[in-house]
Length: 232
Image (cartoon, rainbow, N blue to C red; front, side, top):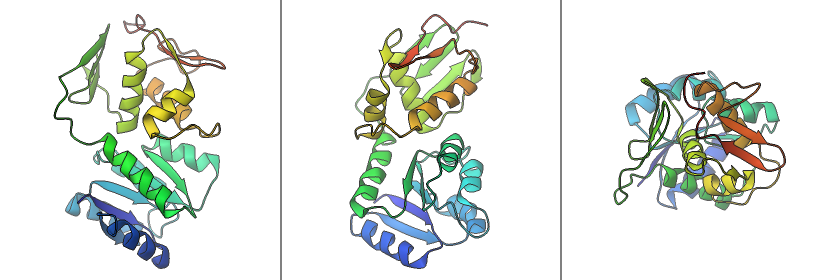
């Protein structure tokens, strides 16, 4: 039974979400103060975090940024705030998905299941490694190295890099990437893919003003350049 830690100070909403998820075979613990979330994570070791942005004590964005380096499970931001800046910050701080309240319970459940599927252990697949110059991507260990330097990626950042690298030299459409990563059609508005490409460029040492390793092909999608991973 997957264990979820829900950080939510609206007691009525927290009770409803907890009841619905537990009826669908999840174990849910609720924390209503952001100052206690990190301790709960370290003590309980949940499989997934759901963080409200507007928490007393530490807010959800701060918690996401602080916990992401040590917490390897999915992080979903659940909030009434729908500003693009909040969504972009959440993704840049390592959130895997972002849901605006009020959300239909079945949609929330589907998002949670999709996130957890992406981190399920892989037991039947052979070890696969992709190498491009100094870049090495190991699918089995889900690790990335640029030369001797390990690159710390979130689960979704790794999945995006893997999808692009598998199609090196091919322009991959944004809606294809979104469908592969999120398991639902692209709505034409969500900027998740763009934010994660930007984060990959920063972490992999690409030139963010004039990218040479992961290029944007305007009106079409993204292009992973196979021979651009030597020294700049």
